[in-house]
Image 1 (tube, rainbow, N blue to C red):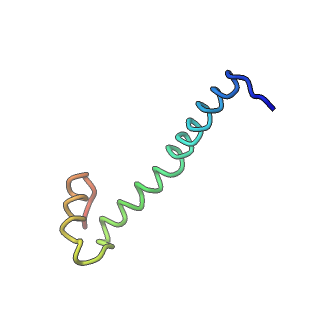
Image 2: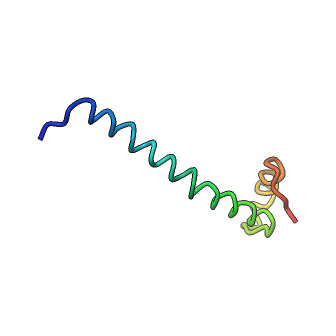
Image 3: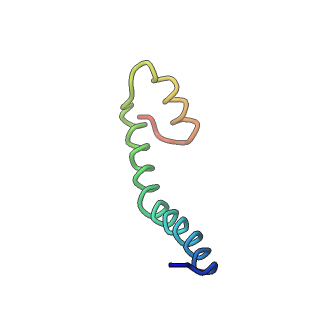
Length: 64
């Protein structure tokens, strides 16, 4: 089966766009919530504490 160029081009544009929309709507808010919670609870290995605290404070997440 041969697919026409416009159909193939549409698929190459529509599929990645759909993935980005799903990511923006579902994944990013969940990631934001998890990051906020981790910064509040300091849920990371002790030897990485300084790096994580720097990330949280640099990006405006509350750490207490």
